[in-house]
View 1 (cartoon, rainbow, N blue to C red):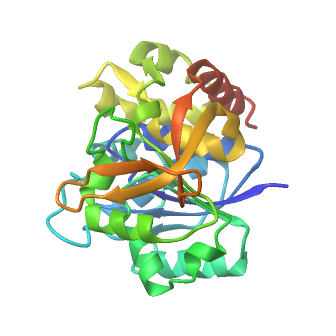
View 2 (tube, rainbow, N blue to C red):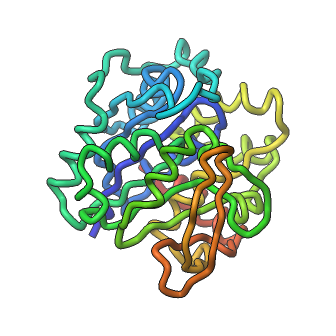
Amino acid sequence: MAELVLLDTDIGNDIDDAVCLAYLLAQPKCELLGITTVTAAPVDRASLASVLCRVAGRDVPILPGAGVPLVGPPLQKPPPQAAALERWPHDEVFPIGEAVEFLRRTIHAHPGEVTLLAIGPLTNVALLFAVDPAVPSLLRGLVLMGGAFLGQGGPEWNIRNDPYAAARVYAASARVHRSVGLDVTRRVRMDAGDFLARCDHPLLHPVADLAGSWFAERPQVTFHDPLAAATIFAPELCDFTRGEVTVDTTDGGTRWRPDAHGPHEVASQVHPDAFLSHYFTTVSGAV
């Protein structure tokens, strides 16, 4: 059976969000129920998501969400990848102010079946859980790309962009509450030239174009978000450890306490070669 997935994304700055969305659209085991966007210029981010959906021939609901964090000024800049919109057909009109209600309604329509995959700041997710505290218990799973737990870097960008939202999300109880953090994602990288050479499938053509602004300043892609997504369908790509995560709301740092009966699981190991093979095999096999 297909996995029902809702994606919450800040597509448009780092290229890994687009790399992740391409994977979800190509993954035959994924039924993508909808996409919500978060942080600065969420409408532009929705337009970027629509580019990939159009190339994939998929009619996926896309709704812009919160543009600013719960507390404090936004750290995220508007998406530089939006400059590529003039080169790709895309949607321009979206429902405004309905993202949280869309998430709530969709999860209630499929109790115990939906995985919420959040790969950006957690503002939309925190608002969702505040509006309807029953939602976390109705999820099949909550999978987050965020945090740094085993002493390797941090504060991580997604958590730092809205630490108050992150603290609320980690306080929620879900049957699967999974984080894939910098401890493992930084081990899955590819040089820009090698990555672009692999973008031969039509679904990756717009990704390669969007990547121009990213590679203009950096020599590689790190597969933060696609790794989190892939664990939904191939959990063996990472090893996970149970425990408890807390968030420092002053700087977005994440603290980790191992506990075999803890409410959270974090990725503690990754198998990079297996992931890269899984990713490109999945995308190249898309129709």
